[in-house]
Image (cartoon, rainbow, N blue to C red; front, side, top):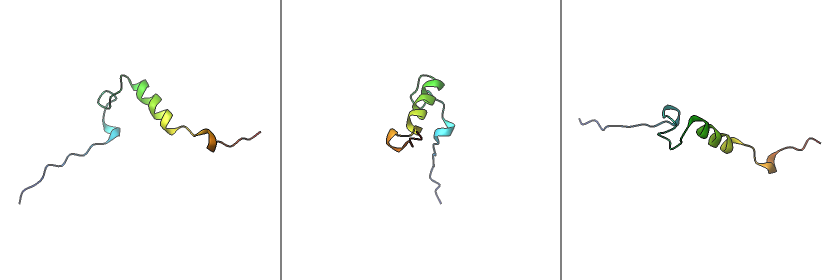
Length: 46
């Protein structure tokens, strides 16, 4: 029986430069942009 080589990738295991960013701070900035609430979903508490 022949075994196939399996490669799995996880974003949590790669460094920022492998993901295409120049620094850890640049990666964190892009992640914060992706996780920011859109203005139309923010609750106005005034």
